[in-house]
Image (cartoon, rainbow, N blue to C red):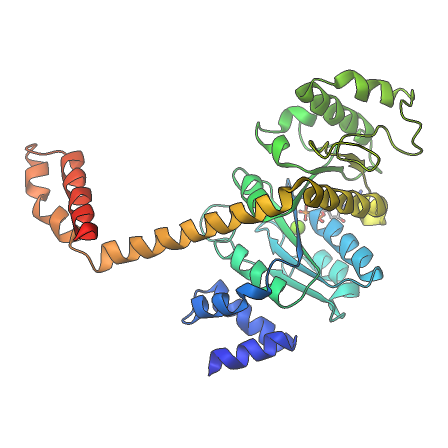
Length: 351
Ligand SMILES: Nc1nc2c(ncn2[C@@H]2O[C@H](COP(=O)(O)OP(=O)(O)O)[C@@H](O)[C@H]2O)c(=O)[nH]1
Ligand SMILES: [Mg+2]
């Protein structure tokens, strides 16, 4: 009954229903699986955009700018911020609250800060589920902000359709500061704080690095020096993923300059994201990414359920306890015991 009410409120887009649904899935409260099952047919419509990068790069500021830009297009936006260093809400930073003000009074905008459980910067475990609720609630764009520390850039890429990596000139030693694997997950690079020195240098470094990785550094370099190969106005080049290109085979991440706190550079980012989405659709990558997400999600749920069953309801714990003395005495190893346990589980499944 309670679930029915929550679902009805969610479908009617009542803010209280949305808040309740999110709180149920965020805390894994009873009924959360039924809720997620009930909303499943209504998911898959929102475009999920990940914003990641080092603390202070301007991700939250950019999220506000993107929100304003999408609102101006008549689209609704939900922002999920998983950033322990500067939460969107909670009053930790007065500055954040002030920057939020213009959009937070708009009911086409929903902003949610999520606590990280476990490692700093790690995605809150239920971020994906919260995104599903927002998707089902009908938001057109989901912006997922995560602080880029370690694994979380890679995590955000697995849950977003498009991933934006926000960098700033002062973040360490330019492109050298980027760990391997991080560059690969970015569908768009934004060099923010372009009002400060060094932004164009960093933009150039990223461009060259991307070019070298793809074996076409010279195209990018020539384009940078003003020799336009394709005659396009205002574009450094035209990659395979860009309009006018024959092949949707590869996407070349654009490297865009922005000064988010001044509202500069947002237009090209919105446009870049639209182009990326068009490429995702045309290349079949969108369907592929979403299929992969569903596979991974199901695997996670199975893993959790099996874990719970194994440790709470099966004999596994007892078997280990019974053989503990043998292990201590060196008569059997943990590997022997584990092999027996697994063999036993297999038998159980077959029986
Ligand atoms: N100079 C300058 N400061 C900016 C720019 N964008 C954001 N900031 C400031 O950088 C600080 C961190 O921004 P925030 O959006 O909270 O970064 P986040 O940690 O990546 O979410 C804030 O004081 C912003 O006002 C910019 O383009 N130029
Ligand atoms: Mg932030």
